Length: 397
Image (cartoon, rainbow, N blue to C red; front, side, top):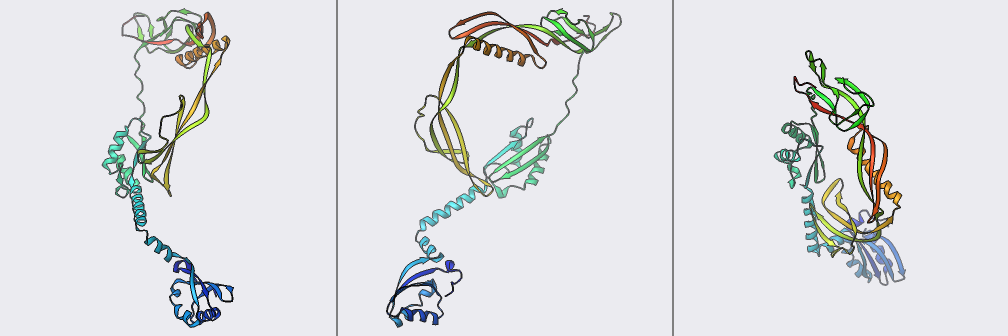
């Protein structure tokens, strides 16, 4: 017989029918229009078959007429699953409580983050958002739409040129674009440009003012390089001296460089700690005890639970403590010297800014003591030597 429709929804029973008139029993099922399928003869007096659950209760008179007996072998379908679940009330209640709790937790705003602000403080943005009903542990359905929130926050924070609100699951991000105001033009007062160190001038370019020195001139610290005074004593005009002056300056460095180089590598041993994360709190579940390594590095991996596009405030956090080992390698005296000198050169270039060039270097004194190389090194450096000196009206050079 043809397989009935919706068997899983209506429930299916597999029967074993035994007796002298099994064939007559099957014919009676057909006469009474009771669907039966997958009839499997197991012998002359035994057959297995499938019936719908509601029809099982109609079989007793047919069994009496044929003298057969039946035995239920298998039950399938939603009615039987529902019956089994009905016996486990505590499980159903717990499952319902879990889903209700999950729904409620995913309906809360757990985190409000502010991005893009520089001059505008995060506290001011969060305060304005709270006034509009947006804050942690607020119900999502009580928060206004994202466009409406953006307009309201822009009215409250005129320092921002644009504010966007983006909601992803239980987190809200407020993106701020601050209004850019042109920087006021600097107000210059009349000035000289003077030397900030003892030097030999290598390059001078006077954009405004009167150059007092020229290339290859040796100058002392504080000497005027470009004067802000034009004219003579009777017809004098004060201007803002502008220009670029470079010179050779000598810097003496005391350098100490170790002859032992230390590096750290992983040994492969690790100790993991597992945490259950609930909002901003973490509860340790695994990995108790002291860290068994004297030297180690720790890495943290957070894995929140997600539902569709929602990021739930529940998840796992794994903290991996990995053992490290310190390796020591000896350097030759020449290698230690080079490392120390390279460090000093990098310090000079960082300290004296763009356009600085190290022309030469000379080791004045050197000694080796207590696993270190000590040196006194003289560097010849071409650098910007100009420094401003404000002028007072009627003050001569």
